[in-house]
Image (cartoon, rainbow, N blue to C red; front, side, top):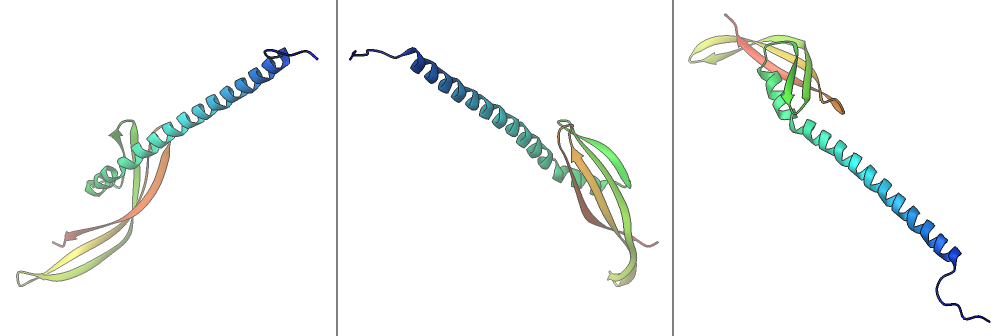
Length: 129
């Protein structure tokens, strides 16, 4: 019987194939992780602009519109009047009447990669003349 020192060629080839497959799998995992990180950054960017979008819509007198919120984020909204009612109250010993409006607002916020849609209600009032 011969005393073998070192590796046989087939053992080196098998270990090379195993090493190459491990490297390929780890490269794929890095690629997928990087893609998910980019998507998470987009979602975070969009969600960070939501308070700005809501305040912009509430302050606007328009029924619909499109606005650029910065960082490539675009806001599109549309509102519809749900109800209109009249309320009265006392201010400084005088009877005062108000119109109260309830709007339902739909808005889409996003950039070219990701978009989210939301809806909320806005109550506005104005004094009767």
